Amino acid sequence: MKRMRVAVIGGGHLGQIHARLLKANADVQLVAICDPQPLVQQKVIQQFDLRAVGDARKIIDEFDAAVVATPTTLHHEISRDLLIAGKHLLIEKPVTSTFAEGLDLLTLARTHGNVVQVGHVERFNPAIQTALGRIGTPRFIESQRLSGFTFRSTDIGVVQDLMIHDIDLVQWIFNGFPSEVRAVGLSVFGQNEDLAQARLEFPCGAVASLTASRCSYQPARRMNIFGTHGFASVDMTAGKVQVVEVPSWIRGREFDFFSLSSEQQAFIREKLFTEVLPKTELPIEPANAIELEQRDWLQAIATGESPAVPLTSGVAAVRTAESIREQAMAHGWMNKEPQMQGVFATPATRFDRQVDPLPAILQAPQRKVA
Image (cartoon, rainbow, N blue to C red; front, side, top):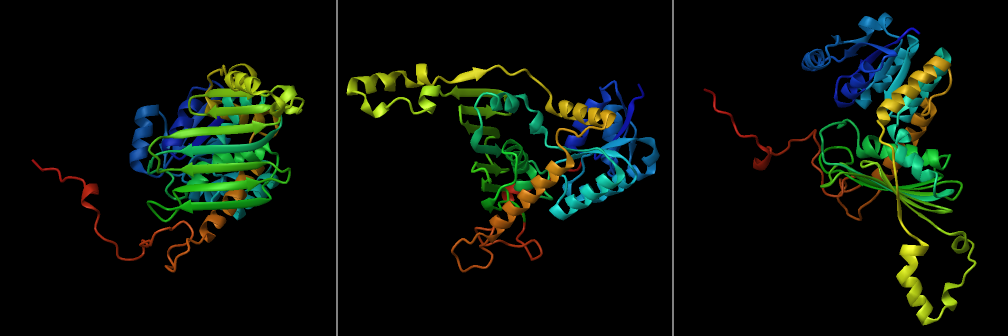
């Protein structure tokens, strides 16, 4: 079988991960990594023994498919050109900066018949899949996605950077879009929000509470899922799942706990979480979710079937992310200062005005020149 010719557009952190996995895939011919920065090109050549070019358009006839892993603000322009050229794409999340840009890519993909997958990689996390199989119909989800400040994805806020993963997950799990969105956010370092909290209510009555931060002391990727038959706590970083399965006689209200004698109540309190509602850790087979994502995309190209995370899902996540950011930006902090609104809870010095010199603690020491 002819190998799929693939290019990686963007040689940053995610682009390099994609390149390493594609290079190891026997069904793929990794043609090149495309990045305009000379230092990145040198790194690609040294680390991957791979061709590096500044502009993918210069080698447009040499590949059939591409991974777009550039800064988000470039996704639309680059993907648009590639779709018109007939290329199949795996576009990293968020698929575009705006909902309108996403709709434009959808139109082009349908017109030209391209297979497009969006990089919502948590769909391929085996811990999530395992948890959903044990708790019945999901009703309420709370998630935390926290990180330190990495200086990556600074062109977007934390809603599009981190929370977008959980937006996609809850829309997939609840099979729909939220009918009500409430949100608040805070900017810490720049012009975009660096932490945010959102409450999403869905037409089916299900509710999700999402928290994201890129200014946290401890990184975390956790999701608690409450369903009709039990509860699951998922640690997506460690790949661990703990579940509590609720017996049918409790779910069906077949037993009156409040009619028990004090001695019986004491017995229940002692045994409730060890015998009636024990917490069980489920075994999870280790897996590389990005590798699974790539293989699903390549399989969809080969068969013509829809990938697991189609472009429609990626655009829908951007739509909800926009609603969350709009709600956060409209939030008032009960203060007369005009700057203290939206994600600016303290008077903000805009970057288009004169700013104070860098604080001494952040100034790098000068190196002595020999």
